[in-house]
Amino acid sequence: MRVLQQEIIKALGVNSTIDPATELRARIDFLKEYIQTYPFIKTLVLGISGGQDSTLAGKISQLAIKELRMELNDNEYQFVAIRLPYGKQNDEDDALKALDFIQPDQSLVINVKTTVDALVSEIKTSSSMLISDFNKGNIKARARMIAQYAIAGEMNGAVIGTDHAAESVTGFYTKFGDGAADILPLSGLTKRQGRSILSYLEADPSLYLKVPTADLEENRPMISDESALGVSYEAIDNYLEGLEVDEKDAQTIESWYQKSEHKRHLPITVASTFWKKQES
Image (cartoon, rainbow, N blue to C red; front, side):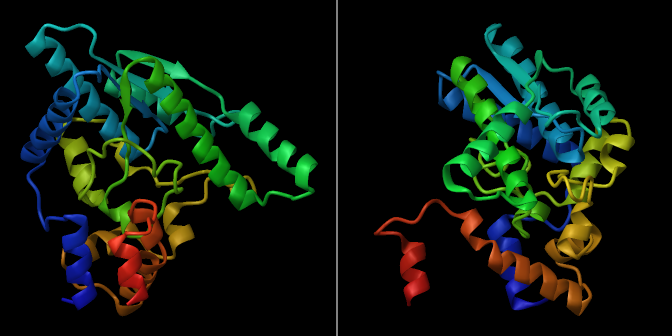
């Protein structure tokens, strides 16, 4: 196994194999323990896209909340799922199917189009600066997270993130957008491991077999993650699970990992050990 591959696997906490039932139980308990550690938290909030990651994170969140309600006899505990389209969501049917599977306590729809367009327009008016399509996509992701934290703030809640190992290794998320959250119940999982848990939960296969896409760019609508990354999730999963992969794929994965390092640590401070490491 490559030296950097070993370091990445350890850093992201990936296991080469998992038992879906055991893994599900551990992640439900992880959320329950987190909530009970902070008594002011009564709500979990998550944006639902209709893809594999938000479907799995949403189901785990709902199961954790349901158990807490029963065990503590406290009906204040709630899971709130939020659809966050920009205008009309291209895969709205998938999002509705995901919600039907998750069965959240509350389901909201907050359209971020007005907010995003107003900000882009104001930047142009104030600075004559034109926001690129790619940058606007990041603004959409950040606006969605603002909405989730707004709801969480009103409901004594915590925001769930959907980041997992196959996403984290490439940094394929928006910094302070979908990369911002209070707790990550999918951390350390590869894509195929997440699929295995959804299969165990008897989710509709269409929810975890669909082609993953962030769908943030208007000039490239519904472009797949794999096309944007230049490497397949199968190769990423193999790499993270300690298997041999094609040299070109390994180099692509490692290049993304190194380029996206800034997304995987807290803001730099004067006393930051990371900053000192970079200087040495």
